[in-house]
Length: 234
Length: 234
Image (cartoon, rainbow over all chains, first blue to last red; front, top):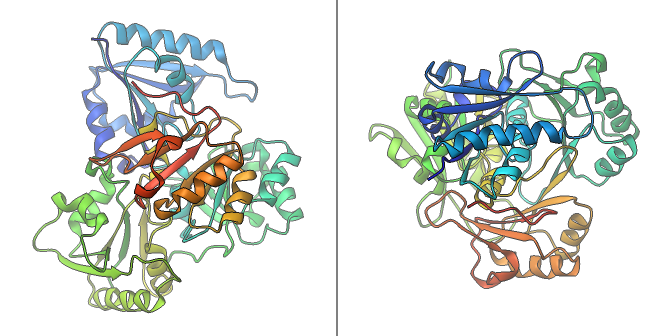
């Protein structure tokens, strides 16, 4: 019996937003694996650092953080490394910030290993609803529709997607914030757009998007384009 | 100091998908409130029934389950009941299946009470990613967009929203399943559409949407319209 690959959704950053199931499987896994930038710490690992045991074998999978096409060779190598553990009958917990199947790197590993191994996915709290909670803005109600749009899309595609969206969440901001500002301004939807940075983390920030500096926006930031503009928590 | 209203996201149904934070706040709350059908049990309460204490005061808020306009009078009355507890300096935990701000009834209570009371939202695992996990289908990757669409919309609006969507999740199926089948068939997107019923619950079911009986579909069902049609867990 080969090992089981667990894709563990760990939520948006607050360790308390880990689920009971993810915590149980994390603690039971002899091997944990996580994505990390080529240099620097792994955000997924940092969420659960306090729950890890020194006896667990850790596999760090380094990814280039620069934009570009998917790094297929790195995914192939990561999949082979995990397969070697599974073939030794050891379960592997793959740590995923947010949810394993909602953007992120796990899907590429999953696609390579699911045909050959048993895989269990544990869904997690996604940044989408974490940002709405941070902003104090009900995201969608009743018959409303919402579209999630990566800011990394070309400008004309962003315009097209946002024009057709009733409520929108634009994710992966980073260096694309200026482009998004132009697009929302042109569509008359900048007013009421809410900027949320590092939701549920220590340095969480919520502000009207029109009042942010487009040059200082991290990748882990999102803009919620609702109709109301948010009611605001006290 | 009046009490604090907590909107607790409890996830899609599996009690193990409750977060550590929701569990802590749930256990600490002297008062819990939850939506329920006029007759029958509360789904939100059932998720955490094993964690409740007999000493906690429970407020059941009955809602009509028939379709129609939002029951404003019921929301007003529920808000007044919760306000009376908060005014007695008692914290109230409002139980929400899934996420408090992702559809559901909490937003209506929030809107009425947030101007006067401190409210804290605890995001939860939404049915959206729970269904993807159940289906073994990466939902969105890289630059992809996803639109969440209630099946309760009129047919022409469903057609319009689905035509413009790259990846779609159609929620709130119930008696609208037949309409959705027609729409997806007409758009040539029925093949590969995945039906997920009661994700993470005991009676979870995953099937090609084209093979389901449109007459026997519960409200807690969703159709994922991805490009790949899903790779399938083993």
